[in-house]
Image (cartoon, rainbow, N blue to C red):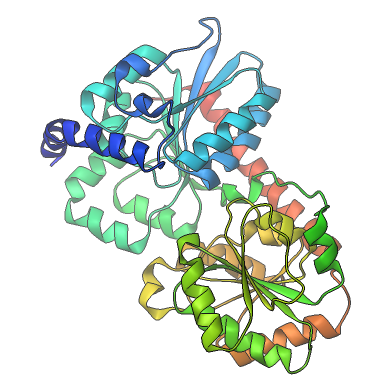
Length: 427
């Protein structure tokens, strides 16, 4: 199976190149740096031969943010390291460009597509001393080539869903070969730990979800929209998927009967659905505004639809109550749940539906500590939001202290295993 995979990726390489070029013109790739993914001549090595290089591969924004505190800790632990971060998505690349300015020993590149000759050339060019993959970034050519070159290989925040586990079981011999190549496996949950044991993996530890340790900006929302919302009752519905906006609008109608000036802010998971959501608002006879970046919230609009990326934390900062989507739709049950960690870290009370598979253990932890709560319908959400509005203003002190405690515990557990691994280099 691995031989077939290797040959197929080689065979389809020209098609991958065409796809990357097409994505560039669709503005889904970095206009200047897209060649890093497809041509070895653009790997652009920059490294100090006197320092050991640790390569972290993190696919997207969440994974990239979660490894920054680890790099910071490693810098405190040993000044003789330098770091390479590779990512896949354009948004993660843009974030990495900004974040690495805080360090003098971190470089960012886009991850080359998993074709055998590209991976080998990348490793020969950068010559990393250690390689860490993050989350579910299991690329067979990369994993096996790293193992072949006898470079210590670890995976951090490993996450295997039930769906992907069943797929791997169909090719169990291949799965054992791939997963047994890891010298260290730090899992994000107990479920993944159990799945990896099925593939005879050694050195598995459940150190907790490292997305708990990602740093977050707690500055106030100091602009015109913050002033407008400061004098209003409002709530957020974020990461909503098609079908969940109807629940949110039903909730708004119920709230409107009790709080005449209520505002509902909806941040859909896919902002290209903004016009569709606005049309749905018309069916409910609700005045809606699509808020683009830099726009000012209209006092006359009841429903505000966020049409931007990277703005949510500003709203979490000043909001008490948040509904997080991809959690009420039965059709998405096996791939349900969105990340509630940023909202929790900023002291919000979180509401979610019964389907939160991707973050099951995180939600269980938050539910247990009364930071989040499961709701089943719009009336249920209405009652909880009413209780929030009728009680005190946002008091996030206890929530933030608890989240800080969980963050510190997860970071401590993770660093214990990483530091031991780096100092022993057991391959």
